[in-house]
Amino acid sequence: RQLLTESLALSLFAGALGVGLAFVGIRALVGAAPPGIPRIGDTNVDLSVLGFALAVSVVAAVLSGLVPALRAARRDIESTLRDGRIASAARKGPDRTRTGLVVAEVALAFTLLVGAGLLIRSVHNLGRQPLGFEPRGVITARVTLPAAGYGTPDQLIETFRRIPRLLRERPGVRSAAVTSQAPLGPGGNGLLPEGRPDEPENRVFARLRIVTPNYFETMGIPLVRGRGFRESDVRGAARVMVVSEELARRAWPGVDPIGKRIICCEGSPDDPRWKTVIGVAGDVRSGGAAASLRPEFYLPIRQVPADAWNWIDRTMTVVARAANNPGALAGTFRDVLNEVDPTLPVYRARTMQQELRSSLAANRFQMTLLALLGVTGLVLAALGIYGVISYFVNLRTPEIGLRMALGATGLDVMSLLTRQGLTPVLAGLVIGLALALAATRLLSGLLFGVATADPITYAAVAIVFVVTATLAILFPARRAARIDPTRALEAK
Image (cartoon, rainbow, N blue to C red; front, side, top):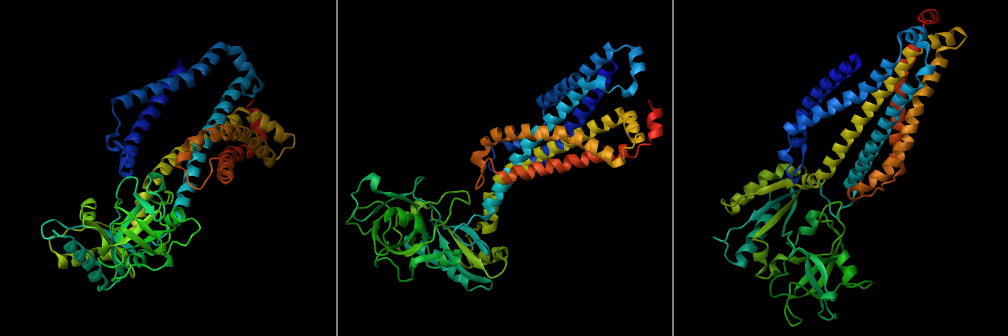
């Protein structure tokens, strides 16, 4: 009864402490969560959570206290007094239970840390993934021109051309441009290269961007072949387009695309919507670092069809490359728009680096959650190892004293305890390895540039566990090495 009471008291206290930490942790979790996670704001500690915590505390108390209580109840006082603390041989059952719990802790914590390590490597790879443009030094902002005052396509075009022109005149701005950044549909535009029958299977789907001539320079997108747009690419002149390398590979595999013609945005072969390819731009990962390459094509803003302004909602993105700090140009954006039209608002004025961090926010959040769970498991495993070795030291104090009286050194004692302590750790790592190989398959959709069986991650986590376990063992082992043999033998 006493053992059960002690176990219940400890479990309830730990449960109450855990609930308090949960209150604080959930607030931090919700505050750190990136936008877009469904119902993250509804996460809280309610009555169901409190009931679950109470139930787990009671179950933990019963499991941890019932077995020792039953075992203690079966031992008679005479044998207990006669055996004393040196009767370790008779305690193999309890020792196996404690060792088994350590093995389980290590295996589960190893699995969690491997998952966290894989996500950490994945986020690192995403941060180093070439995007096809140079994001450093670039700031963007969205601008919408209202129908009142900007009723014709010419008014829209001239206003959007004027904004980057005024920006380039301001100090601290190296270049500026505008772009639509909007595809014609969820699947992209169906482009028909010249010479192919007008059948659905012959069309190449690509994302459209309407841009001003300085766009490629401003974004740092290389032109690998041909030329970019000029101010002379106006309505009435030859209709031109720039295609991405991916689009060129799909539309004209193995052939130089310069001078080739393609039809886009619907139309017929007799329609002036046939465009001539004048340049090939480097591929851009528009969907983010983890996105696959998609075909893209660019049209000059002064050749945009009149109906195009309907599907881009009269909205364009202004991009500017700063000479120094791009964040300082947010005020410059507002000043320029105020000069163009005081009624025009600027929204989503953000540096491209901020946009990239936002695109990786969900990956970082997942990584952080799993890392916290893994570190928690590692700490619990270390405490378990420390507790078991400390218990063994207290239990085997007379035996240790006898060994030292017979000539064993403190180093011998530390080596003995270290070997005994690392044995369940190594067993847990073996089990954790098999468990991690199976469990990390669930993470395959979240990983980038790293395999679920990445040997570097597994080796690094194993080293962390061995080092942590060794440190947890050394504290009680050093205490055992300082035992006075005389007093230890008297303790028998």
